Image (tube, rainbow, N blue to C red; front, side):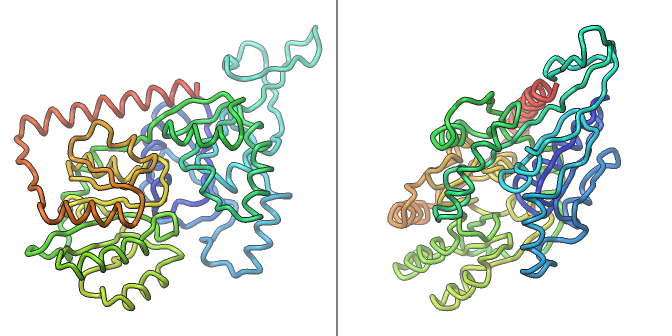
Length: 396
């Protein structure tokens, strides 16, 4: 059984983190799966099955370290720390620190003749008469976001992009979750890489099952309820959403907005909500380990980001058959063949005009029959089974 090491910053609540948990659980029947995190104690760690092992470089969450400790950790990640040895495949599952860490040289493993070296592995003969060979570990990098925007546009960001070009050259293959992300990546780093597009994998049965959990929902039955699930970071443009919603309210177009998630911008967003007197109609609910009942019971699911990768949470909303409103980002690839989706211009004016039209007419959801629901679930099953085949083909 091949030993596969997935790397990610942590197992906190997030899109790529949820994908990795579901993917590891699914692959663990055929592969020896270990998840390597930089920081420990992520809440999603509890959702891994018993076959998936977790090891961490640091035994606390990122937020538990002070500024001095974070600087020391950053230095160690760049110059001292290395991933553990002894795995056949090293998969950096997120851009940034974990990708840079996995790009470092790892001690090669001795592999005796006839042990079945994978075709994708590079082998080096110690000498022409020897049966003993050294097998190099295969390295794969996963890209979930627009690499040209995810680190910003400042001086430090430019330095990161300069060095990251060399970092990605250390990998045998790069996996993108969307065609647009691949195109954006190649504009920055060139296309001299072994590349493939594989959509995000989700355990759709878990999404459906968890959406049935009985919880006390905050929704107003007499109003239209919009929901977004995301990290509260600049990329997700929640501050822009607050301003647009305040404009809609001034024009007499009413709805309630609920945000599931947490992040570095929470305090600033709450201050803006208070300043614009939106406290009775725009709610920050915080992070939820199970967001699916919130998605299932909202009227519209929104993802109005400045930029996106593929938008895994949109697949969750699709599984639950919800109407979806997004801005024009790479996430539109996720809703291309989904007839309950609307793509708005990625500007304040475009979002305002789009939401105004939607809320004024509030198209009612069509009633879905049992037969239609079963057909839709079968379609979803085929879609995710195909993703697993693509991933297994990449891992080998």
